[in-house]
Image (tube, rainbow, N blue to C red):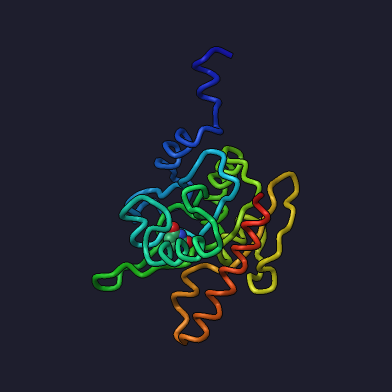
Amino acid sequence: ADAETSRELDTTDLESLREQAAACRACPLWKDATQTVFGEGPEHAPLMLVGEQPGDKEDLAGHPFVGPAGQMLDRALAEAGIDRSKVYVTNAVKHFKFVPRGKIRLHQKPNTPEIKACRQWYERELAAVRPALVVALGATAAQSVLGKITPVNRSRGHVIDLPDGPKAMVTVHPSYLLRLPDADAKAREYERFVEDLKVAARAMK
Ligand code: URA
């Protein structure tokens, strides 16, 4: 193929994927969101982290995990000895889903059709980055990464081999930690989260 054709067919280029995803209309979530929040990180990161969807802060900034959940994630990654700048960070769903409540925009869980419509972008990110390990943060990410509804609490912390793909692991979503009202439970669950990330740190090598 000539250079022009091969460039068009190069679906493994993250920058061209980002541009295509910016115009995605595969589900209705683009209508109310500010922008597509695509994944970010090194082209061949050994570890890919998958969240649920951008939150309020991410929707405005255009970057994944920059709000409160992102700060929790950064702290836990550092404690597990994982350098975030070496991780490819993305979301199962790439537009913010919310309902307006006065001045705030209240997060809504993406549904299965929305998760399925967006999975094409995750698949392309996976093909481009080819990480050794994918870690799904929470149930929505687990559904996308494992291709089926998976209970987080029963499967968390175990590294599995995906057919024709990378290794995968499920753990909780950092927002779950933020929502726990009891300080002791929060501290305990945070430690479990860090332990899961330490398992991931070993498995990505
Ligand atoms: N929660 C997510 O799942 N992803 C983000 O990017 C931010 C919050």
